[in-house]
Length: 436
Image (cartoon, rainbow, N blue to C red; front, side):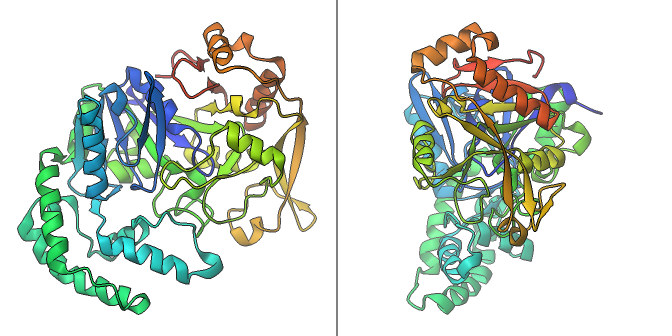
């Protein structure tokens, strides 16, 4: 049974921070359920709604609207962080209708310790990890000695498995830091308490979601990072440890591929990146600083200033392909105000040849020369001005901006269905009223 009319996947098409949170929040107005299917608290989604700025690391972006929220089995969970986010929402008098997969894996303090220590030893191959324990937890999952949420809420299982895993992790940590000595009993007592708090939220989310689809519930699947950071189809090793694209939805939720409907790709009007790895269109001048400040390009999780550059349609075209994108939302056009000229990368030159597709391997990308098209910029407009333009619709956009948007649409051969010109829901233009 294909439920394409009542599901939509929100997938970032670049290096992350494309504005997925805002778009998910906007579309969630018509949704019943919002699902996270990958990643952990290395992701950061910022939403502005009704005068409040929300910053989520694990909680799906439907929380401000009090939608039903699901953290799928493809995620890794730091229970301390998740409990803090739940309490923060409750402090804002928000109803927390959360369900957590019993088969999602748990992040422990030894994972966090290993993340930083191993990263420091990788030299030029370090990924720029957030050091939140994400990679080591996925590693334990693959090695089949990970501890899952089901274990967390059953103290007898938690203790038995932790007794096996703890000494292994302690020996690994002592290879780098002989002084690390967080005791087993301390960890067990702490995590037993976490399990008691989270137990009411834990269910079989695969069964629940498939049943919800059969009942025609409206569901959004929200990716945690951008596609180019994905473990299989991103720029390895300079990325994350999960599949941050539509390909990760079935495995991260238990939803069959044929039940996943529209794929909405999110891009922003320029490129940004946190972490390591070459960014061919990266800027290092005053223009970069202006974009960074106007776009508020600082990491939600770490606060790190993001690297910024011109929009790269060459790698986005690759992301459109692997995600099977139906349409695109473009965000942060307002952040390019007052910059003239603007540039868009349309291809790469490598060793004198024009490449046919994004080369994926960092050893090649590091030696690629971007090919640019230049565009006229648009003027500085007030926050209120952008809101009024959004209310008036597409035709009210500055003419150079419309040309910029049209070029993107034509080059990617993919329609643009949403235009975002500010952080608030009201600063959004919908071009496809049948999107969801």
